[in-house]
Image 1 (spheres, one colour):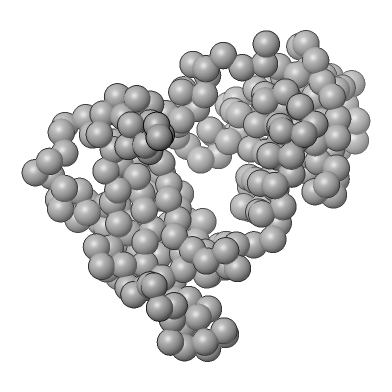
Image 2: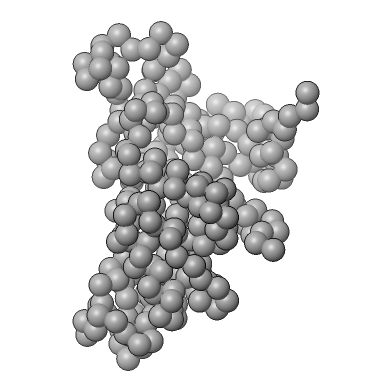
Length: 264
């Protein structure tokens, strides 16, 4: 039976062999700290045999892990930042977020892999994933809209929610010509746009309403809107640029996504 291996897919996508770098977020596990049990799972040592010490910073852990594969890795090798030991979502978001962000900021890191237990994933993240997959498969929503809504909602759930209640300068609730400041994560009206930072993106009524809907609707209704033409393009651009600016990096996976033919 033919199958396409992950190794082959990564090599085709990034043009080189991709190696995992084992890292530690310093977490324990619900099956070890007494919440569920104390003996751990029989199939998991939990300790992350190849992970660096959690006492090191994430850049230091990455540097140490790269030395372990230096003999076989080339100068242009890409890496997966692999949070390996124990359960790497078993900590508050404000603790995990800077570690994950520090890992993916490294230019040679092309992917993030997080070892965890299914029962230690926050329900709001699981709901977001499932609703996005449902929108693609069953509702046949355009990929560009589903992708943009997912980016915006995931950033909001991770602590990067933009302020779209009204113009950040004059307070106008529904500006006629809204402008999104991706750098500051705020809404501006056209008259106040001169007070914004970098990454000013013009919106229209439809794209602005779609961003508000994604942020404030219940999860099951997050994808219950339709856009087309220039409005769809503005919505997709605002969400994508916001993610890139807030996380302060480019994504090779995004370049690959754009190279594919989507939405006939």
